[in-house]
Image (cartoon, rainbow, N blue to C red; front, top):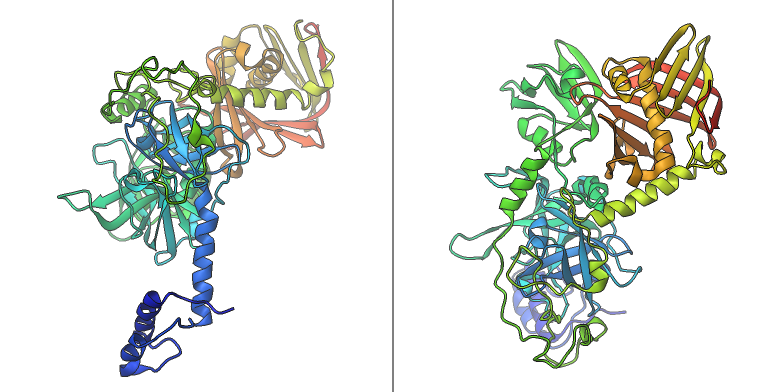
Length: 629
């Protein structure tokens, strides 16, 4: 099949091809004159035909996942991209902030969908929303942005200047002009780390939208752009948050929380002789506990070599707070590679205050006639744009947003929140939308109760007082562990310890005692019995490495007296692999690692930092309705 071009485009193409010595006509000095005299369609070189078809196919693959975001009440908007068939989508924090908790979103299929806010990363300028109304949304394939290189072809699809009033997004094509760029917050909350730079045209309204590679795979989320100082004119330098950074935050965003970024707890400088060295370090940091000291040279973070202070910040800026990643450093000639728990950049109150100050001013709200003036009762008007087909010669329709209002705190008018959206919004301090955290908590407890030991004791009346007795060996010594309400005991060989108060268990963890295994077991037993709602304050934190290793594990957090307990479970099996008990944030938590053989638990290992304090091979695990004597 021959690839044909219209005459006007064919002549221009022939001129360009001839100028570069390409095409089927004469070469050299006569090329331009010959090309200009072409009377009909020309044939392109098969390689050019294949490249053009591949580009068109990539655009066709990518376009359906691009989202046009509109703020209810006409207060602005931007772009986004779908990443799951359930309608979860990524966009920018600065796109969702004027909208508040809900918005309207259009896809290239011509339909408009209600959407609800899920989670926020105000430091990294990311937000997750969920489009509602179906469970088979078209979604993007996530690329590996670490493989991207300057010079690679790319495309940006979105809603510049909110022009997608007919819901057909704009496509711009270009190259990646840089990778691994870092931009300091410069007095703002937003920090762009390890981001992509492109010359593909980006303008106001593209924010939050996708940047794809030439295969139509998602490389990142468009964020900042450089403009000519005298006007909002693109100068060919735009930036995107890498999709690999977004992957690190997906679990945190699904938690419905307002999340923070990570810091090492140390400052670094670039050594004039090469390398990056520690210039200051907090003694309360985990990095210090793992042996990092002043003037030590940092070699790698999470497997990525670092040569400058900029490299260090570029890597750290892509992690959520609380992660544990492997750090390699050299101190006094000794090289150490160890997992390090990262600290938060901000205290929670500080983060919330900075986020509030970063919100834009309330957008103007045009006067709208009351529903009574239209002769329409609340909910009587049908949203024709939801299923309307766009096209033909008709004037493009703007999504029907006029009956929407801005959410409280973003304008004088009250929003008309659709019922389907209102049911998915739960306000709670520190959360963008607590509803989604409740969903993840429910998923966690269902999984926890379906696995050993809970599934072995399904017929036990959970309303009654229950106790666990675990027997086994550590080396040649017999081990017996007992936990019940206000009764905790451990026997290892001839060594016995007992407690009747959780405060005593706190001291066990704080002093790195082998009895630190008891609060982990009792919190586990209590969580199974009561569930997250009755356990005390509990929340789903997101996903993180276990011991610095991937895949990312699900993490649920619960307050157990004065201690904090974290359950980490495998993302595919749902099996709990580790329970951490934190007594003092300035010291190592008690980590109980769980070994399994099939569905049964075969061993428990207690660690503080990188040291193993107790390793128990289990022979029996029983549950009774009263504490054992």
